[in-house]
Length: 192
Image (cartoon, rainbow, N blue to C red; front, side, top):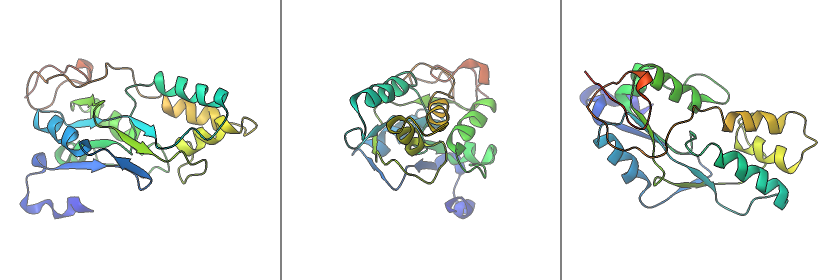
């Protein structure tokens, strides 16, 4: 992994930008995430939109849009930036088959690192119905378009809404460094 090469670089000056192979980033995607890191945020997550028309009925599309609208400030591995020092401090991505993005995000918050949702850092991801990660976006889309698939819809829906609610946007951190996890994601206070 690239982090193994950080011997001569200060980890707090490195930002790990994460996306997926079937995802396209906007021209300003990296700049939006890097700006958040420059302003003192340890991690930022942006929205993941479908890159093509929803692959199911209009009723299934409405259910999908209801799920993602209810989780506006969600976290997707397809659109995530984490400073290397924070990533290393919490052990990085865990050895999970799915949900490693959520697990990392939660560990960052529990450790007091500043996190925010950056709506301007948008990506567009494939609306494929079959993916590698059980319970991921493909599972959710498949479950919505094939309602007879036992448990798929509920697994995908619970993953999509599992992130604690927080205000969208990043605002400005009050101070550099860590902040207590109870301070919230959009307007952290404190520091070291």
